[in-house]
Amino acid sequence: MATVRDNKAERRFELDTEGGLAFANYRQTPSAVIITHTETPRALRGRGIASELVRGALELIRADGHKVIAGCGFVVDYLNKHPEYADLAG
Image 1 (cartoon, rainbow, N blue to C red):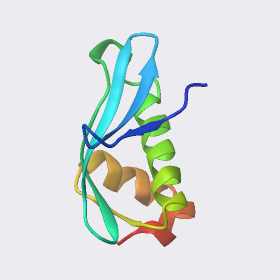
Image 2 (image 1 turned 60 degrees about the vertical axis):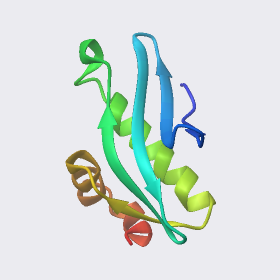
Image 3 (image 1 turned 90 degrees about the vertical axis):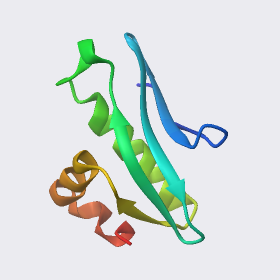
Image 4 (image 1 turned 90 degrees about the horizontal axis):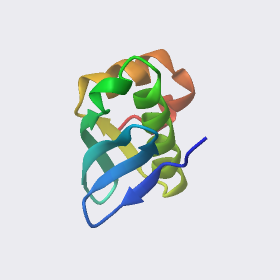
């Protein structure tokens, strides 16, 4: 399983996949990370890669002690389906 990384220079979380790069763009505030857009290579959609990406991003956000603001419909849906991340909602 690949690891999600925070590419601070590009302001996005990234996940390398066999078919390309999946990423989640974000904006940073002093206390929260606003995830604004997620993208998965078209050929790999529907395989759970975006969920893996968001899960990894949320773990990184939690480790940094920040909250998350879902500015992307996919992240809103993910948070609604995964109450274990409710503590991160900002």
